[in-house]
Length: 191
Image 1: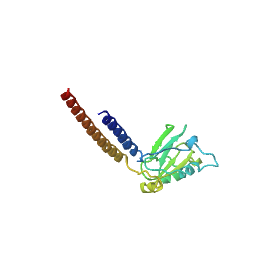
Image 2: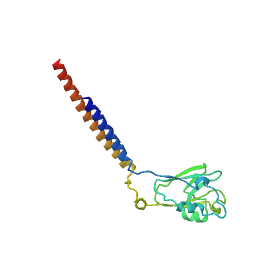
Image 3: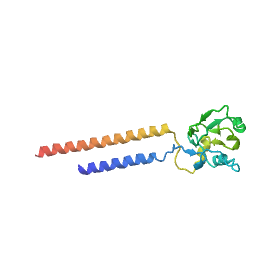
Image 4: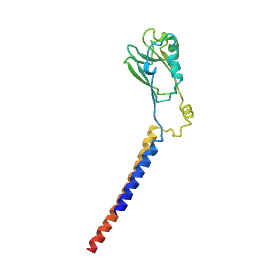
């Protein structure tokens, strides 16, 4: 009886480890990009006015990623294409001036960001971010062996695996109880 209990406990442990380690292979992670790195969102030097677009072109942005803008006495705006090239801050689709702005990239396509502080955009404090379409994103990550699935699909998978594991655990406990009860009856009869 004790050996069955130890073996079933070992089986359950291995089963749970297998289930949860298999879930690690699914990727749904998004990234948060710190705009400008350690310098943050500041007016660039006169000889480095493309710093933000150079930085953006060196990264691969996906739907669900976030842009973190860190700044002092400034602001960040998302604007349309024409307003970006004209440094027009009068019609932003997004505005923040709290010094620690997180902007979520919620769709594929092009995002245009400018500083709302007077004269900063004209000095190069602006950036174009291109968010990859999901198919393009998958091709870029083709080297990764992790399948890309959505968050809701992972919850469904976790629920199904947890249900199977709990059902197996229940069956093992029933078998252990039957053996314990049979052994108790046999010992009672013999005594």
